[in-house]
Length: 420
View (tube, rainbow, N blue to C red):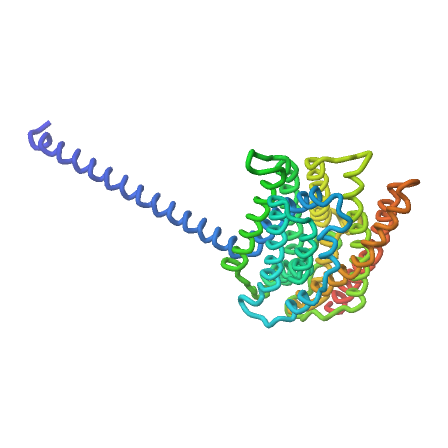
């Protein structure tokens, strides 16, 4: 090795070290940029989720599932619960909200206004339990809840926002996801509601912790709807039509959807029959499980409410997985709303769902006292007669839905022949 080579060796070594260091810094910079891009993507996804209607659904149903257990345990000896009074309250606010002018904030009005009523009812029950106020104050809370629009305005408003954020082809899938999310939130909340009701401290009595959590969730839901919720109306892009069980693919986007009056009438009839069957059974279920021989406690009541939420999950799974011939076995309001959303133009979907909810509320004014009277008259010789009658009405309600499914499929086959 020459002297020149010996002198060049340290220089080459230094150069390689600097190049290695530069490569490491470049790689570190690229990793940092990649992590920053991923972080930005996560933040954009989180921001989009917070501005959608999904957090409102989850927060509201979590709070409602806790509130329902508390209300059932607190007023189990009362002759009329605020929930029943709210079901028969005037429905003018729901119609007014559905007919309100359109705009970024006005679109969310049918959701925001009822959430105020939800929050007021929770605050009132919290004051009744914590301050030993007269239970009759809950009648006023139920009236205010009804005047705010209540569930009759809130749920069609949620469905309308979900419809606006979806294309015609994805509308059925979106509405089923709303029902699924609603059921999952109710399932989780109901499972914990009984345990929270029994939790107490030296300063907080039984049920107060549960009502505090429910009130907090209602307040968070209202704040989310007021400050974060944004109404998005997506353009109807051309995508492959989809079919989920009984629900047929939507009409192509270049063909405006016209009102199908016979199908709408059939679906309204099915909804009233199904709601009367389920609502009538649920109306007496509270008294049935709290009295002898069952005598459920708060934990068991929560588990029972959680079991009731499973219908939303099983309905979703049935609509997605069952074939056409077997899909009639999966029947619920999720099926009816999904079918109904495809019988009217997108601009009329919110009004149609609102009228559906109003029909169900007027039906409640009939089936609630009727189911109560039937339960009282059959309590001695057949305590479960009202539940048997409810099951029979549910089976009858499947007939109009099945007719709509057959009519829609036949109409699509006719359009295919005409197109060919």
